[in-house]
Image (cartoon, rainbow, N blue to C red):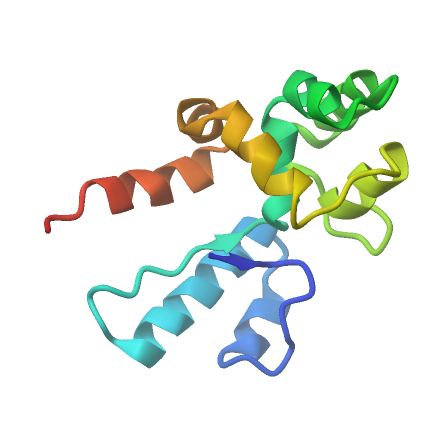
Length: 145
C-alpha cells in the first residue's frame, strides 16, 4: 500500500501518469507499472488515492470521538460532501487528507491516531465507504494459501 500524495516523479512510468487527468487513473497506472516491473504473483500493489488518511474520512464520527476535537465531525462531513467521498478528498498541498485533518484537529498524529481511527472504523465500513480500497482488500481476502 502506497500513498499517491507525494509519490516520487522519478518512478517508472511517470510520464504516462503525468498525462492522465483522473487521479484514480494515475493510481491504476502506477500499480500496473509496479506489477510489470516486479512480475511476481504475490506482489499486489495498491496506491491509495490520495493518502492513508482518506480512510480516516470513512467515518467522521469515530474520528471526531477518538480525537476529541470539537466540531471535527461537521468539518469532515462538509469536506466529504464537497469531495464526493473519502477516496476523493483531494491532494493539493493544503487540501490532502492529512493536511485537512491536521488543520481541523491540531492534535492529530498520523502514526498513532490514523491507525487507531481506522481500526475503530472497521474493515467492513472501510470497504463500503472506500470502494477502490475495498476491491483491493477483497482481492487479498480471496487469495489462496
